[in-house]
Amino acid sequence: MGAQRRALVTGASRGIGKAAAIALAERGWDVAITARTLTEGHGVDTSEAGAGRTIPGSLETTAALIEDTGGRALPLVVDLHEHDQIAACVATTIEVLGGVELVVNNAIDSGPGSMTPILDLTIEQLEAKLDANVVAQLALIKAVLPSMLEHGTGTIIDVTSNVATHDPPGPIGEGGWGLAYAASKAAFHRFAPLLAIELGPRGIRAFNLDPGFVVTERQEVNAAALGLDRHYVGAPPSVPGLAIAWLAGHPGDVENGSTVKAQRLVLDRGLHPDWRS
Image (cartoon, rainbow, N blue to C red; front, side):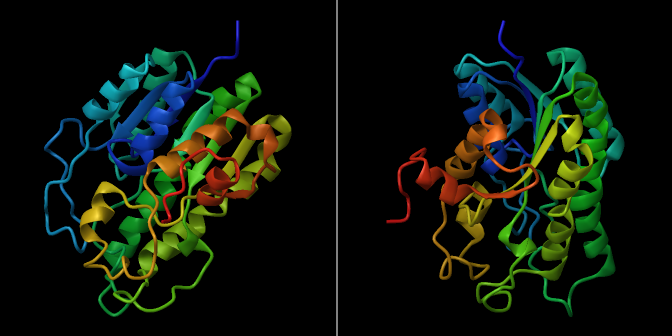
């Protein structure tokens, strides 16, 4: 019997998480998926540019697409600001699927503050970003590590961002991004290398996955309003999705604790048609 393949992917109602979950299922993984939106038509864009619009995507839709591949889906409603829900989703995943060998830490706080100028940024907005994009991520990792360590193996893929390590080309509206989002992603960016150093000898592999600029359902509507479409060529969510699936299947081929550039990986390995033209 081959090794068990059971994954937990957060933020999987749409965008990168949805694409990653489907790509993993196509490669034989059972996938637990989390998000706030369970049913289609109930997702609301609360970001600066979103204006409360309904956005497509739901756990039920992603679960159906996973099952279309022949894979097993476990949809779980989780709000990153509710840390007890995070612990509960890990416990349910282990109970129902029998374990978890892979975590894709993808979900973020998508509310106001990510694209807010410093003079307008409130302390509450910064605290919300840090809670959902840093503290909640650690809560998830700490909840899943005991099971991984017990079995002597586990892979954690943290979906980070170029904003964690690079300065913007201009202010917000001219290709830039907000302090709160950048600060939270910068803190999160340190998780993978430290996990590799501390727990690599015990079988844990951890990576940062930098997706590059991706045209998700939300970005497709909001990029122009945020001044991003004039500065970046966006990849479809399937690009980081395939990069995550490849990395999950080849964790020993990449240096533990390193940052993987999703777009470069899929182009170099011919995993996806070139979208840049």
